[in-house]
Image (cartoon, rainbow, N blue to C red; front, side, top):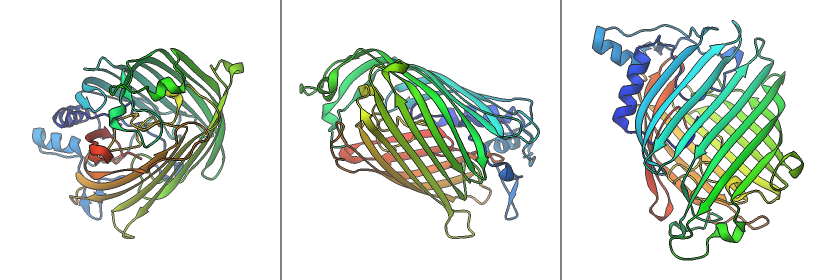
Length: 418
């Protein structure tokens, strides 16, 4: 999970992650939230690819200490696999941060998909405190999937107004507390299709603002200031997932549609409805190679009503805080958000330890409800991949993103962006 864009210091994340995994079996599960793969595509032995033994950071550490790597296969069972990694980080939003992240991975039955509980906590130089917990629990027969998202944040953060034509000079420092409670239940309906419903609750309270640094009236003030907003209601969800590996896909596709209702009857501050469409596709390019072309579309619309300002679609406020590499979280906000990204992924070493990517994204947001989409804002850059776990194919991702108006920054995380 990405509670915010983790820009961990490279030395700390590499050393601490490698040591943590070296102390476990080679099947230790990475920190990234694991959406389980299809049963017919359980991770195979990835110790050798095209005759070349594969390596990850655990192998590097083992070779340093005893000269031996490992080539064991996936052995996740009903016995939980626990991973914990502390780190010192730096983010565009937080400045220096102390982070403790970990997860528990297990199967509820011999043939069930991997279930996970992922948690982290952090405290930052900007006096931000975050405590997110995400769960993804599969039944023994894989007929049911229970997906939860629970968060508590004390989160001072700038906002820049509404629409994708906003300027960096429109920065408006805000502060608030945030509580999230989501639980969604999905049922297998055939093939790669799932459907279900859920209850979601977002509570922003003790909201305050300083006002625009340039002295102008802030869009937040014009939108309607509130010190407390609640969004409570139900969702209807549809899911298609044919990826061969949900952590680092090489082929297949993914599509998730979520229709959300928030009503006064269920405790919301106002009545409003939204729709999120998340679609991804993965190709080997050129065909037969290990290089991957990954495409992503993420569209987030307020259909009716007026949600609280902080519930509006916004850069990097998707479920995994993944949109908009090249920009600070919350840089663009509005009633409608259209987002697209492409990424080309390739190996730098035949043993899979190092890889690279180049990425390009673009987003456009409207301002108030009923207004048109504004300027398209691009983001782009290169990235480095370091294999954290060769069995699950999880990488440490190190990207440098560029955006408009001189926006730029280093983005480091565990697991692919999408």
